[in-house]
Length: 333
Ligand code: G3I
Image (cartoon, rainbow, N blue to C red; front, side, top):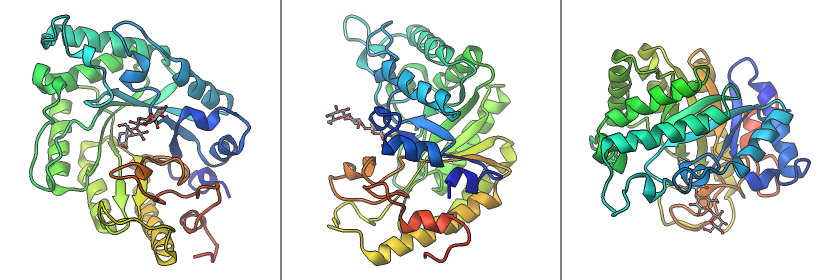
C-alpha cells in the first residue's frame, strides 16, 4: 500500500530527499518517492549556501530539479529553509573588512535573499521553514534564543523581519518556525511564548514545525502528545517536519546489523506515535520523514559514522517492519 493513501484523510505524508535521488526520474528511488509521498522537502538544495553562495549570485540548478520533479508528479513542495545559523555563507554577516555588518545591511541582504528565493517559487511552494533552530540547545536546562550571528546583529527582530519578508514575497505560502527537541518542557514553553509574542505583534506565523529527530527510547509517546497539545491554543498549524528514529540510545554504540528486537521495537513505536499524530489530525497538517530509506540518512554520519536504521525503508528500498506497522490490517509485526 501507498503511505500517502493510508494517511490521506489525516495529513500530508512526506519525506526529504537529496537531488541525486531523482537523477533518474524513473529509477527505483524516484519510483518509491512517487508511490508513497505527497509532500517533498529538499534536504539541502534550498538552503542559503546552495541558493546564494556569493552576494547576489543565485543558483537554483539543484533546487529546480527537485521543483520540476514535484511539478511533474503532482507532489506538494515544501521549502526548507530561509534563515538558519548553519549552512549560511560568511559573507551574509560581514563587510569587506571582515567586520560584522549593521542591522540595516543585514536586513537588506535578508530581504533580497527571501524576495528572490521565495519569489521564484511563488504560489508553488506550499510551506516554508522561515526560521530554523533559533533556540539555543541547553541539554534540558532552560535556554533562550540562539546566540547566532543573526541574533547578535539584529536581536529577536531578525525573526520578525524574516516572516514579514516571506509573507510579502508569497502571501499564499504557509510560514513556519521550525525546531528540534520541541518536547523538552523548557523549549516547548519558550517556543510557545515566542510565537505568542510574534502573534501579538502581528507577525505572520502560520505554523510550528516539530523536526522530531527522535530515538528508540525517548521522547515518550506521552511527551509527544503533550507537545502537540501545548501549541493548540495558538491556533496555528503543526507539522512534523523531519521525522526519523535512531536505533541508538547513546553516541558511541555501533551495531553491525539491525538487531531483530530493535526492528520490532522501532515498528511498534512508530505505530504508537502515528496513532498520536492521527489523534491530532485537526492540528497536524503534514508528517514528513527526514529521508525515505536507511541509506540516505544524515544519522549515518552524525553524531559519528555508524550504521543506523531510522526510516521506513531499508538500504535496498525494501519495506521494513516500521513500514508495515503503519499500514492497516496486516499481521506483519
Ligand atoms: O554533497 C557533498 C559531497 O559532494 C561530498 O562528497 C560530501 C563529503 O562531506 O559532502 C556532501 O555534502 C554534504 C550534504 O549534507 C549532502 O549529503 C554536507 O557535507 C553535509 O554537511 C550536509 O549535511 C546536511 C546537514 O543538514 C547540514 O547541516 C544533511 O544532508 C541534512 O540532512 C541536514 O539536515 C538538517 C536540517 O536541515 C535541519 N534539521 C536537522 C537536519 C539534520 O541534521
